[in-house]
Image 1 (cartoon, rainbow, N blue to C red):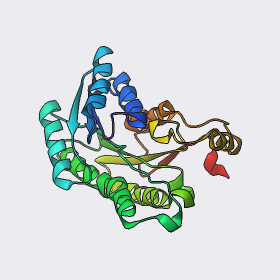
Image 2 (image 1 turned 90 degrees about the horizontal axis):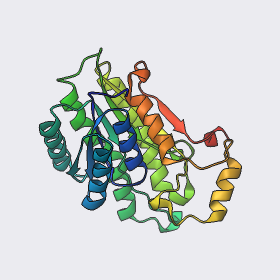
Image 3 (image 1 turned 135 degrees about the horizontal axis):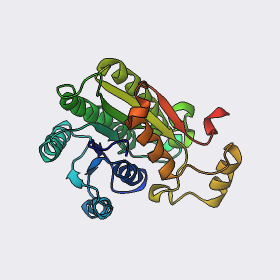
Image 4 (image 1 turned 90 degrees about the vertical axis):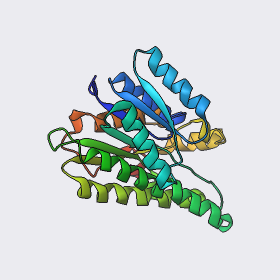
Length: 251
């Protein structure tokens, strides 16, 4: 219950890693705001799961690519909860395609969601936190990055480049908002969620072989890392990019 009496907001919370993060933060005692863009039913299902466990959760629609929509989402969450202590930028997109086939639309959308959207959300959340939090009780912003933000990936080049930019954004905002807000990121490796259902067994086998801990990242692994960074246990950590990759990036 490290987050008892705290309120957390997770973007892209309707499925996969975002869902796992929301459930873990709720299990730690937080009240949850669940952001989503289109899948209201799935977001409401996550909220119902949290409520069934005795927690409080509300859903908030909004497109992170739209600054006005983001600000409206933060305002609505503030009206519902009164305060925001933790903000998790989990919403993201990825297009896997050969370098020769990468078009402008996919490139722009990747950066619009993964970088611009994270910035819009962080800025709006920080505007709320700076007037309410203190160095002794700081706000927390956590970005969900990727191993490919460190390694790069020629099969998903815009995604890796966007996550590298997100890592830089994390460090810049950590400097900007200290000591009133701590800003960190988690960088998971391959995670077998719905978004990665197309991945074949050969890929999974290669990933296991190349990972010292010999398995994919589970959504719960990333959720646990986020819970740590959101909690007072990480009180002296800011500007960090925490790998959750079983040692994959050691190579």
